[in-house]
Image (cartoon, rainbow, N blue to C red; front, side, top):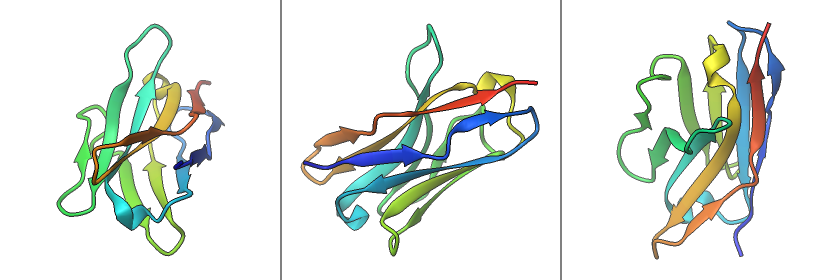
Amino acid sequence: QVQLVESGGGLVQPGESLTLFCASSRNIRSFLAMGWYRQAPGEQRELVAAIPAVGTTNYAASVKGRFTISRDNAKNRVALQMNSLKPEDTAVYYCKAEDLGSQVYWGQGTQVTVSS
């Protein structure tokens, strides 16, 4: 069973930065793609950023230019660098991985709160 563990969430002020990490119990090279999703209260879970094993990264329009997703194969984790944070970025952020057999795995989520 694959475990994905998110970390790095917290409370920040508007304009500040945070970096989220998603550590995998399986070698991340085995995943077809990994990504970050978020869910605000009363809202549906939405894609924030995705990074495939092959190909280009993909970002939601609302975060493009502010967020950067990256993978560290040596540390077996994926990161989400979030800059210029806004109150509307407040949500629980989830890590997702999909393997070659189309099995999907989710982490437990980490809370990001942007407030003055």
